[in-house]
Image (cartoon, rainbow, N blue to C red; front, side):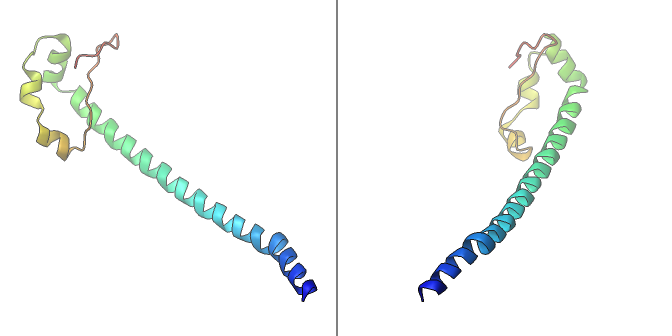
Length: 99
């Protein structure tokens, strides 16, 4: 009985646990790759939205200081919710924050 328990312990330590560890590592790597792909997609979507905002003439005028009512006419709570924005920052060429 004692020999069987020792054999089972040795088998678990050198065969079963390494196989389980290898499988768990593969699952974790797959999940991390999925998270990375998701972040890359989100980054591309955000970049497309930033480019869209950047080419507006109104946005350019706002950054230059010529359109003080820009925020009132272009931003709403509904817009932030629909576009899933949590924050929006406009920067000048010297990286000075506008909002």
